[in-house]
Every structure is written in structure tokens, then in C-alpha cells.
Length: 186
Image (cartoon, rainbow, N blue to C red; front, side):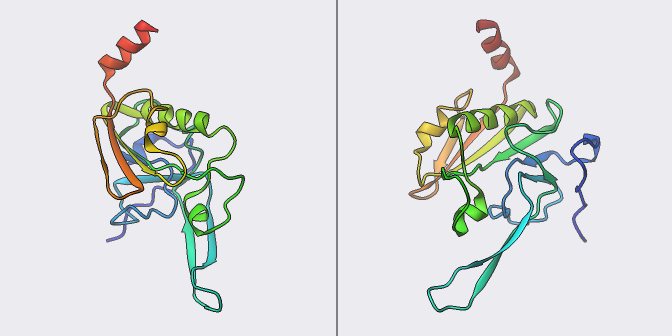
């Protein structure tokens, strides 16, 4: 049984979309099933590249395929407020002007004002979450510490986990009452 095809223009009715949004899917490497029909996969690029993954003199190449359902930027998601029950946010974690190696080609790069980019990304991911929806955030701590990045989020995470020396997970829950209290206080 094949997964449903969610490839549509961003302006199409959300009734066709599943409950989960992967806001920067890249190669979908964290997914057990990279075609899981419960998710809508979004990225700001659609590319297929051959990348040499061997040592010098090795012929082997491995393709990098980024094939999102929707092409859009995670800082300006083309969806209505409160559209998804779960959002996965695994943004690029290396600051560069362009993607040079296999890692940055696979995951993308942060360029320009990366703090503003990530702050806007958190805000957009939370905006499209339904009340009591869950945001799962994943960060590769190769250039910036996770504490620096979590400080850019508009709320504290519920919990998280350091899965390795560099990979960190944090889980947020959209609390409509807390959101209202924050907006009334500001």
C-alpha cells in the first residue's frame, strides 16, 4: 500500500493534509518511514545531487534527494493558524553562505541573521500548531550550543534529551492559556 500523495500547491485547502508537519524535512533522515502518509514534508528546496562519500580515489557516490511535498521556507509557512497537531522542526544547524559538503547539502545552511531566522522558525511552527499541539525540535550541536538556540524559542520546552554528544531533542506544547497570558502581559 503506497502512502497518499500530499504534493499540492501551498494554497490548496488544508483538509487534504495530515496532522503532522515536518517543517524542514531535508532527506527525511530521522523518519523510520520516509514516505509516512501521516506527515506533510516541507523544505525550501527540491534537489537531487550526487555526492562523493568515499575517500580519495573511491568511485562510490551517494545521491542526496530532497523531495518535499511542499516547497516553502520554515520562516513563512504557507498554512493557516492552528493547522497541525504535531510539528517537527529540525532546521539547518551550520552557518554558511552556501551548502558545500554532504552535511550542508543534506540539511541546508543558516545564512544571514541566523538568530532571527531560527526565532521566526520557532514562531511559525508554533503558529501552525493547534491548541495543545506538540512541537518536536531537533538540534545538531556542531556550531552553536543548544542552549543558545533554545533561548530563541518563545517558550521553554517541556523536556528534552541529549541523544549523543551533538544531537539534542526538545519537546514543546502549545498552551493557549499561557499564550494568552503572555500576550496580555506584553
